[in-house]
Structure formats: C-alpha cells, structure tokens
Image 1 (tube, rainbow, N blue to C red):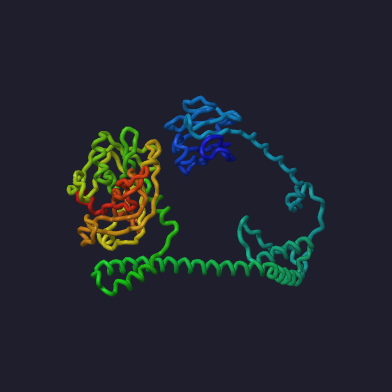
Image 2: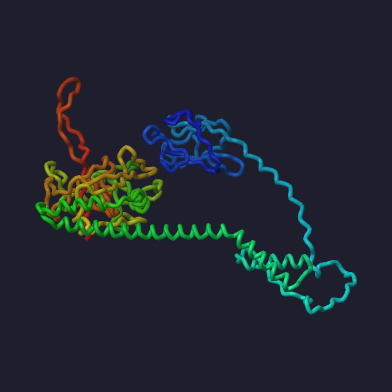
Length: 485
C-alpha cells in the first residue's frame, strides 16, 4: 500500500520472492521519476529468504527507513511495517499474506487388473489338451509388434493392431474373417480421421501462405531500402533548380518504410556504448564509444571536464558499478570556446582506461552526404534533471532533421555542411550524445541549442529576455575523424 509519494492511496500485490523498488522503469514498484526524487533508480528490494522476508537497501543515495529507522543494509519485515525510500521520500506499508497450503492430493483411482500372459501365470500349470493342427487354423499366427512409446502410426497399422486384438480376444484366427475385420476397421478409422486430415491440410496451406507473405515483405523492404538510398544519392548530385527533384522527393516520401520496433532495437543494441560523464558523484554530459577505448563527446563538455579535474565515464544501465577513468582528453583543432559570435566544430574525444562493451556504428561519407531536412533521427543521452550518477539510465528521444547547413546557418557544399539542426527536446546533460539516422548509424554529436531574444512583460513592464530555442544542433560525425588519426 502506497501511503506517501505520487502514488499514495494505491495498492500493489505481488506473488514472488523478490520485489524491486525504485524510479527506473524496470522495477516492479516504479516511483514517479519527477515527484519522488528522494528515491534512487534501483533503491531497494523486498526479498524472501527461507521463511523470512527482508527489506534490502541496494546502495541508495538517501537510504531506506523501516518504521522511521534507517537500515544499514537489510532488515526483517513484519506485517504492517512502513518502509520509506529516503527520509522524506515515498513510503509504503507492507502486508505479508500467509503462504497458501497446498491442495490435498486426489485419491488414486484403483489400478485395473491386467490379464497376465501365459508365461507369467502361476505354476504349476494345469494339464492342457494337446494342440491339434488344422489345415484351416494355424497353431501360431504372427502378431504386429506394438510401436515404441511416442511414435506416430498410420491408419493401416492402427487397423491391424485393433483387428489382431479382437481376433486374439475371440480366439478365432481364421484368415477370411481377419481380412474382413481388417477392411471394416480400416474403413472406420479412415472415416474417424477424415476431419483431422482436413484440418492438417488447412493448417499446412495457411503456413505456406504465411511464409510466402513474410518472404515477400522481406524482399519488398530490402528493395525499398535500396531504392531509397539510390534516390537520395541521385538527389544529392542534382542542382537545386533541376526539375526532376520534385519527382524524386515525392517517390522518397512514398517509399519510406515504417518500423514500429526500430527505436527499441536501436536502444537495446547501443545502450552499453553510451556513457555519463561525471565528476565527484555528479553527472554533467554524455559520451559514446567510437572505438573500444575512445569516446566521442562535445568539445565544450571536455572544457568542463578539464575544469572539474578527475572525471569518470559511467556505463549506461551499469548501476554506477561499470565505470572507467578518463585518462586523456582532446578537442577539435578548429574549436574556439571564446568566440561567442560564430559556431565552431564542437567535438572532442576522451580516452578511457578499459574497453567499452559496445562500439557504435558510424555512418559512411556517402550516407552522410544524402541526409537532409525531414529525415528521422534518434538520440540517447542523460537529460540534466534526470542525471543520477549512482544509477545512470539514459533517455531515448526521436526527432527530425530541420536543416543541414554550414556554420553560418546557410546552405553549403558537403565539406562545409557539418551543422545538423534537429528538434529533439534535449537539455545540457544530453550534450555529447550520439545522433542516429533512420538506418541506425551515428551521423552527428549533439552539441547544444540556439538562444533567442525577445520581449516579455515582467511585472507589467516590457523586458528584453534571452531564452533557449526549441531548435538544437549537432556536429556531423566525420569532424571526429581528425581526432582519431
């Protein structure tokens, strides 16, 4: 039962031995990420060991309290105990339901009495009359052996087994009657399994149709992607006044395939290559692996890191345990931090002690040359207000390219068009995060945003204000190449 926090008044019931609590969405009990700030991302667990329940603190920043007393690491739970996550954080009341007794076993049905074969009958055997051979009835008749357990058998085998059983039970082994009985039984078995055969044929036909449809979809998607790439390359080589541009742009709009799971797949395969830059337990920027021991980020993040002194790179979703010391930092030679009037190449690289588990895939020159306004882009970084160095958890954002221009904001030739404007809702902590294309390759390093001036009324008076623009920009990824050689 939640008794304090954003979810106060609600209840949750669990039937498991471990219940995880915290602000991260992968917990069983998820606290509000904005309201319940006292709680850590993975704060504590309710854990059953043997027959006893415990509340276990997972190294949280603000501690875990049981009935108002801060626990050191773990504490036995009692029914009705109140557990707080931080001294003034969300609070729950724990009720422990008694374990349900196992249902009684149903009585075993009496075992049927099976007839024993002749060889198993008690000895001594009573005297038997000698068998008399007859030209119409042989003394012994071959019996179809039973198939092994679990084996599939055909209709003829079933019919033969049934007829032999009937013949053995009746004691009549006459060839004429056996053949007739085989025919009758086979006819009945065929009629009884006709509906099953029809169902099997129908399922087989549906399976063939589904496989053909899947193959066609894969073929169409592959051809669609190839054609999109070819049309983009053609478009990049055409002058602005070429009348064919409108036709190609229209074809591109119709060909672009949708993929509902693309973003999730991109995050899952890239998450271990994203890092939070932190100093003295506080995060301040994002970086990502371009080589096993080299991370890319923005140049102004490196300037901030140098001012802070000791800096570590914390692996995304590494719970603060996967950390790497930063041992070297370099900025782009064209970056000018003191130039407030123009935009300069805001990229840099960090060398870490150790190796990243994942290295992100970088777009080729041909892929960078064809990107343009309206393209889908994706970012993964650490927004400033959600940064938690004890439990780094990055945020996924989807956006679009607004323009690709030179530093002045005007269209330029490829070698100078390295400023990639986008509309992702990033904040200071997201600076240095990777920007992916719709093909899942890194095309830029997120750098920051524009500032806009305007008049607003404050206390009834018109006042000139400067505020952040919703339009952000990144630096084309090939600017980093000058630092990797």
